[in-house]
Length: 505
Image 1 (cartoon, rainbow, N blue to C red):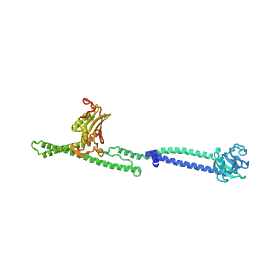
Image 2: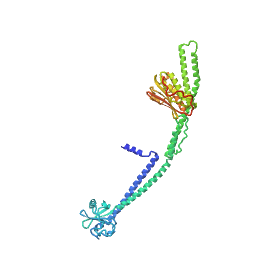
Image 3: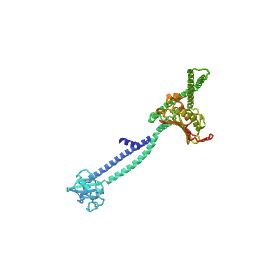
Image 4: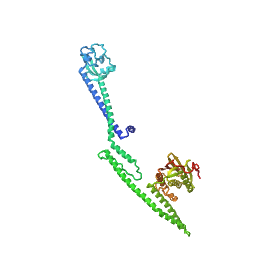
């Protein structure tokens, strides 16, 4: 119950600090004004009722005595209009009247100022103690009265009363006036408070804007310059302390990013230099091994086997070197070629190569009716498609169906490689595009995988202004590549046959 009430109150409160401060100010002002209004109206009513009681004590029962003893109760013209008088004998009201301001209020027993109290009022009047304090009694049509009883000369009870209507009217006028004044004061305080809070929170707004600008900076990679700083760093204020802490944190983050960038640049330079330097000796080793294998004389079988292994491993090492050199160049931001590319033709050629290399798989190609054209690096895009198909072939068992689909939607081209293999382990799904990550280390060694194919795919696609993502579960794995389309290219040759679907072999 308490949690639900707290939740509803939280939903009613403003979400911003400025709104909560203004709301809190208005609530405090309304509570204060309400307390002041209640206190003043209660004090005024108590004061006016005390004055009525004092008047009753001064007048006694003179008007009540004049109701049956004409001329003995004093001149009724001296009584204030609205004065009530009643005579009770043995608990029964024998006479009751109200002064209406005429000259004959107590002289004529048939005057129209005579009243008949209600039964409840008569019981209340009969219960009044002689000489006791004044009480409030509702006389029905005459309204509420302050009444006081005194003992009469004939053993009767004389009751005098003064109306509370004027007291209530005065208190109501005061309450109305206070309500009007307090409402105007609350409205003025709300406007002034909003301006004051807005002015007071300007330093905090500057801190928030600085944090927003920093959060929008690309900090994941590349050289980052954190020039943003909070201008309000006065340690004597709360916002100043927050600004000082934020500036200090930005200094630390900037230094860490600079160190990270320096390390990355050294690693890229090392990878590029090492790859470049290794190309020549690896090629030489491979050439000498192939030359030895071509010797016309008899070569012992163990020596031939060793030479074949040297040639194979040097070839694999050459592939790794070339891949590392490509990644280093892409990391360095070296631009790719910008030419007209027929992605449909690239897909056809890549699938034909994959079908020749993996006859134990079932290959399927789905293309749109028209060729898909875009601008980019044809050689690198061919490498992307080939790497995705090779990845599906290398990491799925024989008999797996692999589908390469291509479609163009608006200003975007989507290429997807889908297979119904066992899928990628969940712990590797988020790391498949990292370098040297292999799903099956043992099998990757036998199939010649370097663990760099998908890294090259991601690097090339990002360099082309696109993105690549993977979704995998047992029985379905999808690598989806999205590239910006290019519709203004002229058609390359004839469209040829329909590319809607190429049947399986």
